[in-house]
Length: 287
Image (cartoon, rainbow, N blue to C red):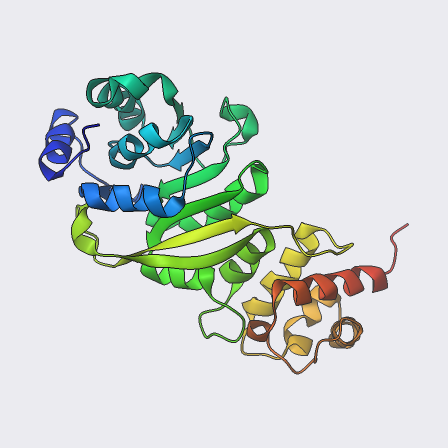
């Protein structure tokens, strides 16, 4: 296996006349040790089907291919999507038949687009869409059992935050609906080209069942959105519009066993599920 280093990455970029863009969040990994570490921490197995979002020039793809049954690489950039199979064929010909490249927007893909049911997400995610991509994949790909993603350090902290933390918020709660989310280590700036002006971090995701509730995911997430839209307000005030009135919000909170004077950052996903359930039960039926 021949991984991509700084010289190879820049040579490929020059060949493709590629200028990494902030719009697509393109920062390419140029350090072989980093991609090997990502694959190792991800704990992939020979039977896994890995989905990689934004493979770029193929640094992580080349490290993944020998360790799994298949890599499904989703790339929005047509030039990069066309080049990736050529890079793999040149540098890892024995694994070329285990690569599937899907040219698509990761925020719009579903199981029908992939040709295989991915079991693990391993990706260096574009900074600008990392949280929406993680939540979308967990929602639409029930076959995903775990993942390891590299994101901006601040985003990693928010995804893995627990109730009571100042950085705990909407991403923390929504990710917890699907998975046990933990920080899995830091990543410095010098492993990328071009080097970003922020540090990165690894986030581990292990699928778990959502809270037991009669409320739908959409109803629970609506309560989460409302609670954090005005996070400095008490839940009684913050959820007033969501529930219809402040009194209705208080009624749902009390029925859910939540102090109406609490704030959203103090609650776990299970609390929001109970709140949504009681609001739905109390809501008047429409003719």
